[in-house]
Length: 136
Image 1 (tube, rainbow, N blue to C red):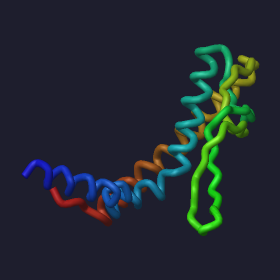
Image 2: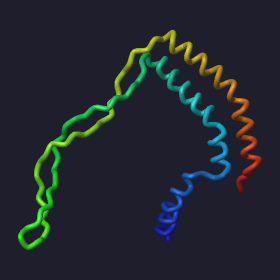
Image 3: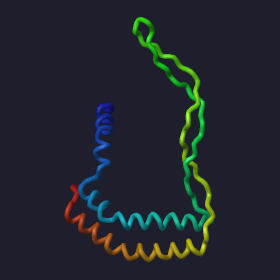
Image 4: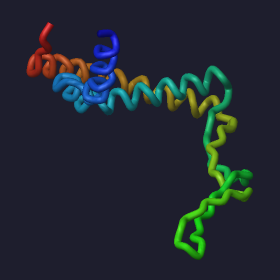
């Protein structure tokens, strides 16, 4: 019985990830507020650390096992493996110095923008909850 329940939950999770109509409505109508909040959290993190994080892509060469498929005289396929070098792209995080005065101005601007968006986001959430009530 437990196995069937676990299987049903595993199959239902991808469908639940899409969200209910209420969740989709809230998500759609509060995207700018969430973006500003995310940027604000990033700027505050930069100020508390004293530096920012950036990412760059780095190409590295890695030794791997490669496969080669060939046919013999009778037409049968054979697979051989051999060592080969492959290029692999990695993302690398690195520190970037910040200008604390500029980051402070950026934070202050984002705080003002977040405060301006808060009323609209709250109204949108209330409207979505009224339009799509969820069953308890």
